[in-house]
Image 1 (cartoon, helix red, strand yellow):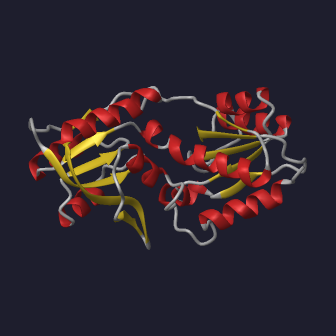
Image 2 (tube, helix red, strand yellow; image 1 turned 90 degrees about the vertical axis):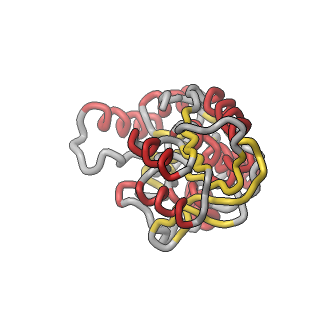
Length: 257
């Protein structure tokens, strides 16, 4: 039997949580504690009522998520926000959340694992945020259509479908970059141009990014925000399971995005 404290310490150390730059509402680390011994670990992309209830039904009392309690910012304890907190507390479930530290991790991060799942080998960082690279990039000699097809397999596995900006037949991807989640933005497009990226693989992005990408000669593959961020939390749960000899389960609640 083990308490929450050593597990949280292991995760904080593994992910380099302390001092890691992130959005204010991420609040990386333990968001809700428990004084009970941890008996089973559950992992999910998003903290939501269905996720919490499923964890409780499966006997888990530590929930690891990528998107935690506070993405809506400061808000009253009413409606869904109240119900999530109430269900966590009454079920005795601890909550640990990791956003950018989990995106950027070189071994169990969303970006490196997505790249490898696509058969790509990361060579350098991409998607700079303050002092760190969140994503990865590399070189290849692969048909862009094959890369789109591989991304579609991943998207459909997790309840979505791939989309892409216009791509010419027989196009070859020579330089690629990956930035999971909401990875298509003005900053990532600007960085892609500067680094000679011809194919950008993301979770999602605004409509205008497909327009700009086409005129910049870049193909963006939108593989789904949810789908591209299933990798890290599953790997994190597996790590805890091995390190502390605990059972672990992944709770799949797709958003369709």
